[in-house]
Each structure stands twice: as C-alpha cells, then as structure tokens.
Image: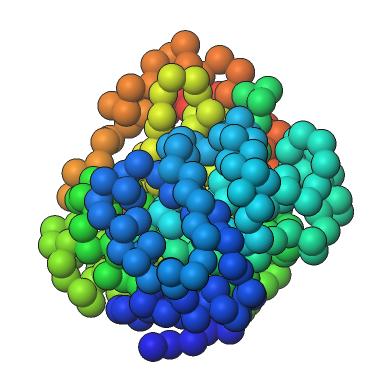
Length: 377
C-alpha cells in the first residue's frame, strides 16, 4: 500500500479501506459520525466500510446527503453529531458526502451561518484549526475532495459557494480503488471528466506554481489514458487505480486555482429542482471555455496536446466534445435538461464565483452569458 504525505496523509491501494480501524485509532475517534448517501448504501459499500469499524466504537450514520450538498443538510447532520456526542467524522462517497462532512465539522466548532465562512465572503481568515478529525473515503474518481481544502455547499440563500481553508483538508484519506469498481458507466464517465477538468483548469490557471502544474499534467495523462477503459469495463483494476490517482492529483493541484468551467458549473449545480451532476456539467462546459481562453495561455495548449498525444494544432474543444461522445455523455446543457429560463441570473453569479478570479482570461457577466448560451446548444 502506498502512503502518500502531501497536504495530508493518503493511504492508497486496493484493500486500503480494511485499515479503517487503524485510522480511527490514530485519530483517537471513538464515536464517529458516518456521512454518506443513499446511493453508497444501496451499492453495499457502506456496509463494507462499517464492517471495518471496530465493534467498540459507537457509530452514528447520516445518509441523507443531497446530490449537491446543502447548508440545510449540514445542519441536520450537525444535530445528529451533537446529540450522539460524536468526536470525529468518516465521510464515504463522492464529493457530495465528503464536502458535506467538511461543512458539518466546520459548523460544529464555528458559530453562525456557513455564509460567514464562504471564500467570497472573506471566510478563509475566519476558519480555525479546531475542526474534529475527518477521515475521507472516496467511492468515485472525480472530485478529489478527499485531499482538497474546499467544500462546495448550497447556502440557505440559494448560492453555491466554496468554503476554503487548509483546516478543511481531511486528516486522512483512504483511497481504495476497489470501492469504485461497481460505479455505473455514466457516473464513471462524469466523475472522470470532473478529474480531467480539474487537471486542465488548474494547469491553465495563471498563478506561478510549477509543482502544481506538473501534478496536473501527470493526472491529465493518467485520466485521458484510462477513462474510456474504466467506463467500458468497471472491473478493470488498472483503469480504476489510475483514475483514482488522477482524481487525487487533480485536487492536489487545484490548490493553484480553477477557472471559468467551475465558475459556470457552480451556479448550475444550485438550480432548484434540477440535481445536475457536477462532473457532467464540467464536461459539457469545458469545450466552450477552452475556446474562450485560447490565445490567453501562452504555449500551454500545445503542452496539453503533447501530454495527451494529440497532433499539433488540434482543437482542444473538439477533442473534448469527441471524448464526451465516446463516453456517452450529453452534448449540451439542453440535453441535461437545462432551458433558457434557467440561465437567468447565472452569468452574474459566475462572475462573482471564486473560480472566476483564476481563469486565465478575465471574464465578465456578459462573457458568461454568451458562454452559457453556447453550452446550452
């Protein structure tokens, strides 16, 4: 088993989840709150994880994590955390349960509404080190939230915002690719494209951070080489290992910043009554943003082409569209159920999103209005 120490400690390999009891011992967690969702429960993964928790621990479960985690859900989980005297959290699932678990931990030791801790509200400086220990166990290969310093939450006022702090990084990530082998093809593809979007956007972000860019390019190469294999055959162990590694690398790298793809997908993910999958949104939006940023990234598009084995001058937007089609993903926002009326107010939210600040080309609300229309199809 690989033990990776970078931002946090990661246990990475098939069978890593079998050491969950050891993880709880290291972090002195006796009464864990287990945060997951109904999909993880239905897939039998939750039962497998619970079986690895020593019988002398008192386990409380919160399974009602929404597809796009909300402040309301975090408050309900917090009530359970406090009522049961929990002293730590184990998050099991994709980015939604892990992000929700981060919000629960934050709210357990920080007063007031979560908006006070949103990055766009100056919350970074308000988040202290006093959060309860969190063990993150990803069951998808996409968000990389298990090693990320952020949590994306839909606030009570309807905004989808990021809570960002080094103190939100889980104390330990247990990355077991075996837990992803039963993921359906559509989710494999959507979460995998989330990892690809992370690697691309953080590589293109203008901040000077060569180590993060090197990690992003390595993750991109792994993901592009294996996403179709993993989608085609979920039991392909090498492909699952490589995709989980790529997802983790994407999140390690996006400490450098993301860009307009995420600035656009965050408001869409908060649309009421439309639980739009974040990674699939990124896949659909990515081509129009790549076209928008062309000419503002120096030689980076050519470096991307070399890493993924494309001929010089290949249109990267077209390449992503063709990859999406091979993966069976929708070709447009309209194909995902988004209509023109849904776009009202979204360009302004995208302009204010924290990811907009690190896009390589400055984008205004007017720019985002055009990009949304192009992605709508």
